[in-house]
Image (cartoon, rainbow over all chains, first blue to last red):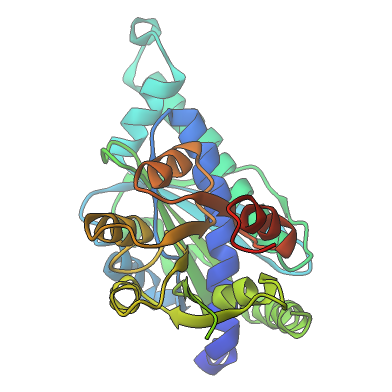
Length: 210
Length: 122
């Protein structure tokens, strides 16, 4: 899959419809957290499986371990959405979702509850963002529930090429972060060659109808 | 010479959609800027009696542009056109002097009532 397939108008259009999806996710997250959310400019690039961790590290400047959850989505265009949270984000979600720490019986239980809280927020962000995005090009995606890819691990371990069943994909990245920095989440949307072909068809139809 | 209107958005598509949504019969002279710095330059050159301003842009954001324009006397009707639909974003841009906020995706149905409300287009 060549980089040229998403050049010029198509890339610009994808970035703009991603911006609209991200805005909807930002509003949902702002309502959940009661905080103002900074939205990033969506980033798009073609990546090979082996270079995905370094590409994501370059984009996001990650230094600490992350927790990642993964969901598949499907409409005419199918792909994977990976939500990344750093440890601060995980801790903050625990605080938002669970009022009483004293109920905890063990660290294992605490980890389980962290994951539950992060699953809820990953589902909220992914669902709002990708539904908002695909709606612009006449698509209604469905989603699988979030599954944990790894907790408190290095990016290289989370995005291990052996766990990713493709060679090359389109990567679309958006970042949602509270203004005070206590919570941040990165959404990586990955689409393989077949999905990109369907995406290009949909984008071309959208652009032709303007 | 029509009314100077400036359309600020990093996306070519978004600028095109906005310009398409403007009334055909409106006597305006449209300029475009794809980033905040160019928007400020165009504003200083008097090309922004009305400014349609995106918020989420690389480098200088729409919030930054509004702050600068306000510091320089706010000689423009600024209408924010953004996908950032948090209620707080709306509150902030109004506090910075924007007269209105339009949610993306833009349409003439969303835009016309605002232009009429402020007497910018009859």
